[in-house]
Every structure is written in C-alpha cells, then in structure tokens.
Amino acid sequence: MHRVMIRPASYDNCRDAVEQAFATFPREIAGKKVLIKPNVLRASTAEDHIVTHPSVLRAVVEKVEKLSPAQIVVGDNPGVFSYGDNEKSFEKTGLMAAAKGYYRNLGNAPRNVAFNPDYLPTVGVSEEILEADIVISLPKFKTHGLTVLTGAIKNSYGILPGAQKARLHQLAGSPARFHDVIVEVFRLRIPDLFIMDAVVGMEGSGPASPELRDIGLILAADNGVALDSVVARMMGVDPVSLRFLQKARAMGLGDFEEQMVEIDGEMSILPDFKLPPPLDAGVIAGNPRNQEILLSRTLLRPQADPELCTACGACIDHCPVSALSMGEDLPLVDADVCITCFCCQEICPEKAMTLK
Ligand code: SF4
Ligand code: SF4
Image (cartoon, rainbow, N blue to C red; front, side, top):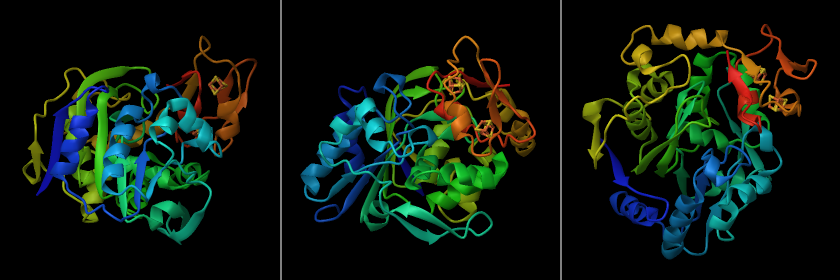
C-alpha cells in the first residue's frame, strides 16, 4: 500500500506543506549526502511555471539544511535548449538563489552505467546522483505531449546530462517506446522522496504550455508510480491508460490501482482539465483503445506559429534527426524524418511550436 500526501499551499506558505511531507515520509538524513533535483526544463522565468517554483526548492533546501547541513547538492540537467548552460537556467528561473549556494552543475561529471541494450548499452548519469545517499525529486504538476503528464517518473529523465535525452528520444522512435525509456531511466536511481509543486500547474500542450492552472497544492510521496497515478486522476486520466505507469508497475516499481494508494488529504478531479491534444479526457479515460491513440500521436507534427516565431533557428539546431529546415521565414518540418520527440516544442523560447 502506498501513501500520497496532498496539502493546500501557496508559494508564500509552502514551507508548512514541505514540513508535513518530511513528517509523513521521514528519511534518515543526518550525516548523509542529499541531492535535491527540481524540474528545470529550461531557462525561463518562475512566472512561466515551466520549472519547479523557487519557493518550493527553497523550503526543501532549508528543511534539509536543518537535518544535514554539510552535504547538500542541488542540480538538474535541463532540456535540449539549455545543454551546457545549466547555470543560466538556474539563474533565470530564480532556482540558483533558492539553492542557497548548494547548486552544482550535474552535467560536469557523468559516469557510464548499464542501460537497456534495446536502446543503448550504457548511458552517462550525473556522478552526484549516483553518489547521493538520499535523492529528493521535486517534480512540477504539468502535462506533456508524449507522456500526457510529466511528474515524478519523468522528472528523473534529467539525471542524464547533455544530448543523451534527445538521443534516447530518437532511439525510442515512437511515443510508446518513449514511455518505456523514461521508466528505464527512472529506475537507474529511484528517488527516495518526491515533493511536487502543484501550487500553479500546467495544462494543455505541456511541458512548456502557456496555459497555467491554479491548483494550490503540494503533493508528496515516497513512491513515484503512486504519485503519478494521483496526478493522472486529478487530470481526469485513468492511470491504467498510461503506458509508462503500466511499465513501471510491471517492473515492480510501485502500484497505481486506487485501492493500493491511500490519499492523505483531499484529492479531487480538476474540472475541465485540458490534456495535451488529442488526448482529451473523454477520449482517454478508461478507453481500451488508448494504446492505439497513443500511437496515433506519431501522426502529429510540429508547426511554427507565424505570429510568434522569430526565426531564431534554435529548433532547427536542436532537432535530433535534422527534420527541420528554415523556409522563407519559418522553420519547416520533414514529416517523414520527424520522430515526434517534441524537443522543438520544448526548446522554442517563443512558445511558437504547436502540434498539428
Ligand atoms: S519555432 Fe521557435 S525555436 Fe523555431 S525558429 Fe521559431 S521561434 Fe525559433
Ligand atoms: S521536428 Fe521537432 S518533433 Fe520532429 S524530430 Fe525534430 S525536434 Fe522532434
């Protein structure tokens, strides 16, 4: 039986909920190396709510400081837009100040570890992650075009430094296999505690959607499968319809069935929650054709909005399979080459990439 804690919170008072998370899921922290990993998708402002809010990170850092002041590391490997630019991402989001001097660049010292040879025989994982005694993951309550939600399990994708993330997107080759990949990465170092920023969440075309949602909650758990199952239910999605949760359960990493997840607090389904297209709530919930629908996402292709695109070319530079080229004044996609990894949507600084 798993437990998921849910507490009301604002960014001004999230300290109380963070205290309760540590009380509900006590960890032996004194004298241990503690790594705290927010979700730092890319350099953006805290008000964009693309990343874990600095107030949540600061509250966690200050709590851990009291328990184990000497050995804290805060870090993440941002998405493709910020490869090699971890500091800028932390500075711009306000997470550098919230890290209170404990920030380290996790991209500097990857160590090779065995991976699933169906994709890659080895991957490089940030050394600080492998050496940590306790890993605390701070996911954000967000949607994601490929995985429907990006929560506890997907936050661990950032333990891979540099371009490996895009490489695995490419090697996965389909949304279904990408669901498998994120679980393979998650299990390389399963975090010990998850504290999720759901004060302001994201709906619509995540993980960098402008559509924000005031939720006013902090969620916490010591099992990522259970936590993501609660997030799915709050979004109006049946967890059984999410392949990555099925895969994680099959690997013995946790359970998502309602009777296996005790809710400590109050959980409610967010009315009219907007899922990433085309997986609206009416289509996905409990629908046995879900796998087919997931696969149909491979038919989607990115398209730049001429009103927003500045033709900066960042999406072209970072497409892992060179599917984009500059047209007259807009990037154009080669539909036969595109692997629908959504990296271009993730990196676009103007939020100009939509899926059609
Ligand atoms: S879609 Fe975004 S990243 Fe690509 S060229 Fe336009 S503004 Fe730049
Ligand atoms: S065009 Fe965009 S979605 Fe398609 S492969 Fe390139 S980065 Fe991925």
